[in-house]
Image (cartoon, rainbow, N blue to C red; front, top):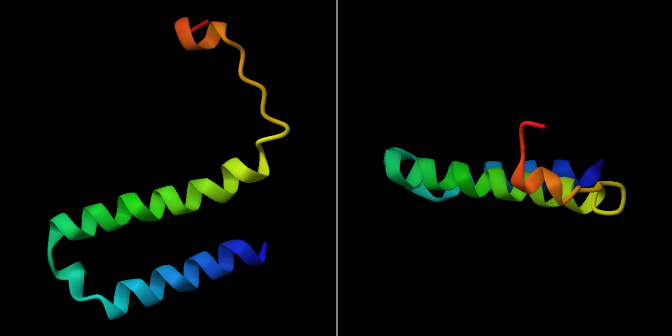
Length: 62
């Protein structure tokens, strides 16, 4: 999928051109942003096929 390739290239460019990876706080915040960016296309792909049962919100172990 070309979308993941473009997201990965943009993350690499962001990582090397913003000097924020020297600080652990900014590095952890950037990793959280990367997780969100990687989850958005996955949620968009599976938004029509994924079904959530309302009972799972109250009883997640069942």
